[in-house]
Image 1: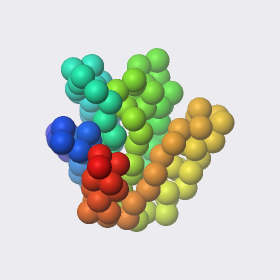
Image 2: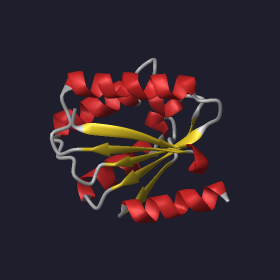
Image 3: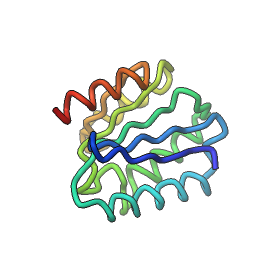
Image 4: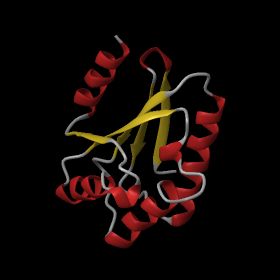
Length: 129
């Protein structure tokens, strides 16, 4: 697997670290299923911090990620135990893609972007306080 999922209950956060090889339809589907199972098992909502700083998707793979995680019937983005999504990236491509998800066409998803995992975790600590 080229991703890992770690739950930090004291911060009400789930951190997903995506590797540079992440992006096949099979892996996106497996990731979405695993995260959905975790959300279903939680007793309280959490923020999702997605560290995509090492991920190298082409346009088609990026569209697959959106189709399988945002637009599907079992969207992990709209799960009741997902309080919101924070993305860690310095990539202009991903930042533009995220900006597009904050549009009416995608349900006005509230996504935030930080340029480092440390900054995202600091934000999460502030939310938990």
